[in-house]
Amino acid sequence: MTVHPSLQPYVDAWTHSIEAISELVVPLAEGEWNRATPCPGWSVRDVVSHIIGIETEMLGDPRPIHTLPRDLRHVVDEFTRYMEVQVDVRRHHTAPEMTSELEYTVIRRARQLRNEKRDPSTLVRGPLGEQVTLELATRLRAFDVWIHEQDLRTALGVPGNLDSPGAHVVQDILLAGLPKVVAKEAGAPAGSAVVLDVHGPLEFMRTVRVDAEGRGSIDGTPSLGPAVTLAMDWETYVRLAAGRVRPHAVADRIKAEGDQDLADAILRSFAVTP
Image (tube, rainbow, N blue to C red; front, side, top):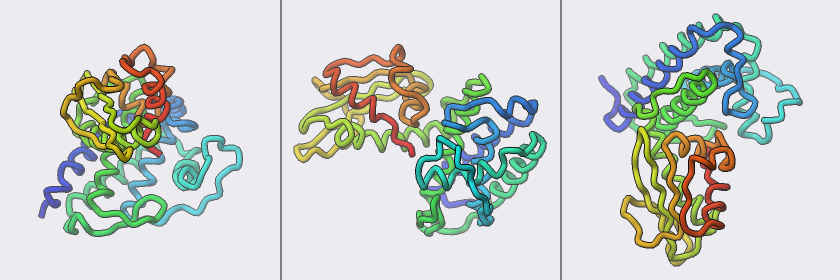
């Protein structure tokens, strides 16, 4: 029996990205596992450790009992503490240990997903122990592995897969967070509109509209006379919205027209991932 049709796109995206990650890291020399990634405080080894850890939790494996060091400056709240445990417990694992565990975890998870018979609305355990639907959990795993695939590609200098199945999942999730950025975080005035124009491997234009009550919504209809138009390439959009880079570092890749103060406020709040 195949998985439910609503889960299949996310399973396909996850599979594509996780296999790409394996292909990236299997040939690495020991020293290359220590390369810094765009994730604060995380090396290539740490990103792979995070992926292994979360996938084993999705399999129902118990979390390791582990006390974190006190000098990890990137661990700042309960969420980052939770995520760091699976990473720090593997910090001294060798390259063969990492690739072997990754391979075994991928085999187990692929089998689990292939044999998934539960309804997409079934509640399962999500990060930090909260209950989420199976569909959302599967969608978020597709999102996470693609984002981390790109982190690894950046660290290793091997660009690619910017238009893969996972990229489309990421596009939908990041865009869903844009109305809050514009209307709430940046405080765009009621009745205004902000246009996002993205080009490159994925091309799209979206308009965020702020209603009379200050609530934001997003659609694909062009706006006449928007307060702000932001144009950038897809890779820059992902890096900004996923919190991998600050606006000033990619200013030469962003074109902002209209109210510059509002544009700056939007860009300062652009990251929508934890």
